[in-house]
Image 1 (cartoon, rainbow, N blue to C red):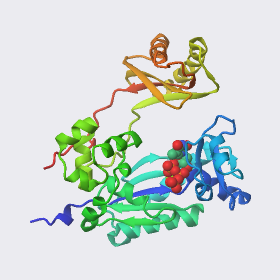
Image 2: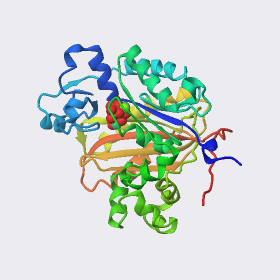
Image 3: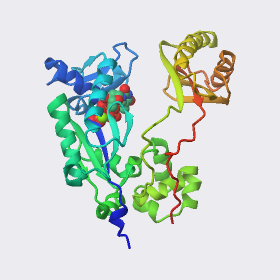
Length: 357
Ligand code: TTP
Ligand code: MG
């Protein structure tokens, strides 16, 4: 008979520390000991990220520059250099590949690695993670944090536990205790709104969810209920998506000044539409199934409107914009975004959806 441990996977989640900011500090010594952020320098830009010194002042990713400056007047905001971050990301990936080729990149600075069958470091996932972080530090002069666990969900949460420049191991024996105390807002998929809804119904930690049922959860979080119930026990059967295919193509812009007339918004939309068309050329092999317009209003609330569509049509985007604008309630428009959804290919390696319990 197999023991449970023979069936356990070993997943590492690696996440670079304040990635864009760390690259800027590495390349510009004068930025190393001051609070810095990376972002555009317009008065209406938002920050991409900031270093840990800036975080002490409460500065965070996606915060408007003006608010960040109010919290930390000496904050130095530098322009992002995407091409450099992309190049560093490739260097990081080259390091991962020394240990496994089962890699699922989540963004430029974050990836899952499945090292279940790796023979490196005596098969120890903990040592592999340490070694990868050491390689990154010695070769790229940057720090990374890691989570090591039996599945993606736990590994991702664990990588945040000892950030920056740290790692956290959740062994199969630790799982139950690790998740019991976990605040629900730490679960990927639970944003501030859902977290508030759950709290209002008496759910604050995974222990509360465990004591409930999928049916009860369904009435609060809809179809996310069964995932949430599983996560509360530390269960996640998703396999790595090593050949991730793009699900959509999106483009958006924040206006230099908030706009209130639909004509102005239409002009912005047409400009975006032309750019989207150009980008679409690279994905000519993909089949479109949806068009979406997103609007963020001046109060930062956003709304999206979509429609099934098999092409990228200007007039459809314009109709969607008109519909979204009916929700303005006198608010001006801060940002407009357009996106296309793609039909997913049925890949063999698609995650197996196991039903539990
Ligand atoms: P994160 O890993 O979320 O953040 P981080 O690496 O800057 O900081 P941490 O140490 O907490 O991991 O995102 C990685 C990069 O993605 C980040 O350096 C900049 C970019 N980014 C944005 O451009 N906008 C955002 O809102 C966020 C969250 C990240
Ligand atoms: Mg990061």
